[in-house]
Length: 244
Image (cartoon, rainbow, N blue to C red):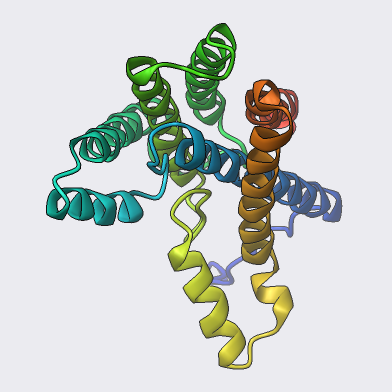
């Protein structure tokens, strides 16, 4: 009797159509992540210019401002930036619990991401309501409440994006993203390799410019940009999530 063959049969390659579908899903996710960066830019600009002079996602900047407030004995600034830091951390913890960690077999857009971003949307909607009720001129206490709501919202967004499991992907703390882009370009890598990172950086800048512009031209419409961008991400992500 002949000995059993030890030849290993290689698995059949995935159909070309499946590979194309996956690439399209990844491109769509990248576009949605850029839209989240727009939300971050607009929210940071509004917090910095209209709600106490604190950042809502750039916690490194807030830590610096906290030190400045201590040296200048500026209690109002310390309360704003200190509260924003605490709210951001609370939001990041909530986002981590809701979105979870990357797991084998994850879809390109996991359902927990939509759940977590829905909570972020609720916080931004609460801030928008307060902004509109006060006619875009909230008092001292309301200003802090709105700032903290936005900081918590971006904390959720910051940890939620980590569910995708893409190394270096972020929509809030982007100093590392900028450093990576510069390093890769300086070492001869092509622009194509860092194209998505550049798109995220440009989305952040565009969101900040639009948010600041709305504050100057039509202050009451400022929250519309944040709600529209995040709402669009939620709707598209939810509709395409299953196919992703």
